[in-house]
Length: 263
Image (cartoon, rainbow, N blue to C red; front, side, top):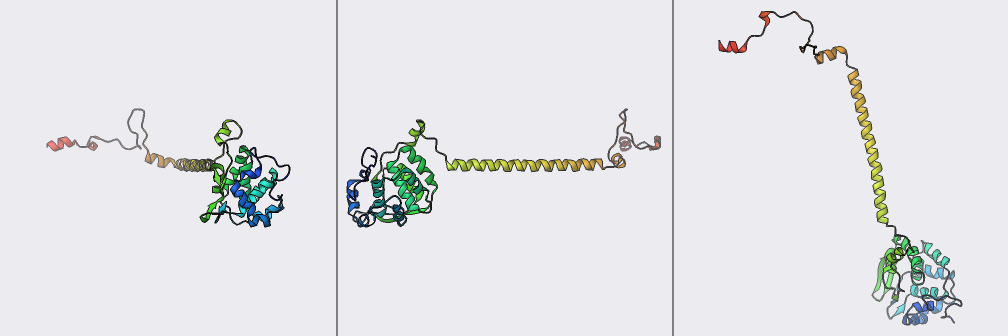
């Protein structure tokens, strides 16, 4: 009875939820010590305490021994908690391994539309996760784990159910286009540059207006005597009018340079 699915559980992808884990791995989980000692009579609430104690993710390691992470995944498939509870698991940002466990369960059991809507926001989570496999321990990040759930066929040594392509769902109108963080950042930078440009143009215009006001004030501050000494006015006859002076006689005419040079 300890290994049977809860009464009233709904079929997932047309079969018993526990059958989503391969038979060989499922039997090894049933025989593991962690399953017998810690996973007996777990509920959706008490499972949180066990998930918090997990220190790494992964499938099987060593002599085909299942990880605690994999045992808790099978327990979730067995008790089949409600969708609202799984969403609360995802929102628990302080418990990253609980979030990773809920993400894997959602990928295996939810509809494709719900998978994209719930897991894509987790691509912004860059925290480190430890993974244990046949080769030992390794390090990866939460966004890498989520990306593998959305793209790869096998995660944690478990074959993932088929997931419809996002492009197909967008063409059918089931889901909206994905918002790119890079595009949003670029648009934000362009808006800031436009604002800075407008501020720069405003400062240049103000400086030009101030310089024009200073120029006009200097031109108005000149006295008539300064203007007369600097500029020469022309009379209607075309001759240059200067200040009145005695008329020149014949002796005052300038000497003919060419004639003097000939003499």
